[in-house]
Length: 404
Image 1 (cartoon, helix red, strand yellow):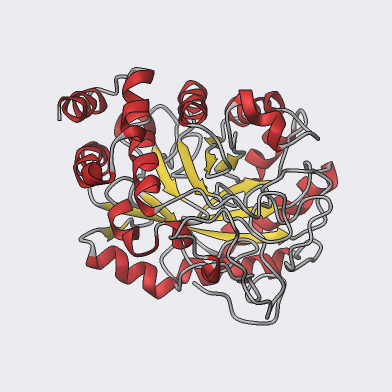
Image 2 (tube, rainbow, N blue to C red):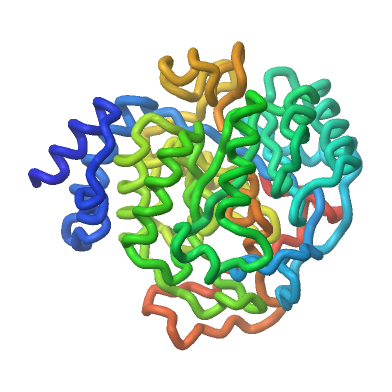
């Protein structure tokens, strides 16, 4: 396919595809999806080999957010039956982080619900960063606390944070349909504040909210212009109790095409599969590793993920290897410029993420109350799997051992 050969050549040269080429990737048929994966996989392997970076989420504060993001279980007015608790103490957060690091993660993503941190909150998180770094040599820490005020990014950097996550989520043109309590420009401003403070910037998107192909291309091109080191790709989990509960718009093949388009547009950045991979990619998750070079290990912020051991088995069975703590995540031209993956410059590898870079990073994922019978939404395609959506009831904020 001439299109794919052109995109591979451009990806190897770090050349931006045209919008028409990016849209054409999304428009390919399911019959061609393996060809698309193979082509984007060449670009992924050129810049990242067969390494897969593992990231681990710690939800420092869950629920009770004053913002109205439609996708979010922690939003104002959410009826999702998620865990709700105030700030974890530094030692509690450090214990939670240790579980993920023991499972093979090299980055810990510290996430808190809310519009943005107060100066006191920055102090809390700074103490937590120091506790985690004192107890775990070589660990990378990413903060995801919402909109930043002047000087807060610098304070987090001084406390030892390596990166800051704040997702654009969707295109500028449709942002007002998703959220009204802050603007797209507010999000761009926070990513720029992270950059200016010397933090590795992490910013991504959420697919499956009813957006068009043009919207997806718009947000990915906007991300390329912002030049984050890490781009988390989230797939909406349409939890009951949120305004987007009936938006089951994704198939495994659609998710693969979206990841491939992101890889072609952002060839040399860390592309992370974040929230929703288990729900929407399902048994095709191993194919997604040919496109993305980073995932979250274990559970997310308010929803359960695949068992940590299953993640590790999947990586090994697919012929990939877990990235070691001592390895630099990004290609040399980015790492030596002080980007994500550099231990000697501004930041390191990147996430919710997921969570910090995950679709839950802004408090996205919720679920129906425990024990509730899942109801298949009327708009769900035949592949919609509401039975795979489960609220997190272990790990941070509970007395149960985390999944890592």
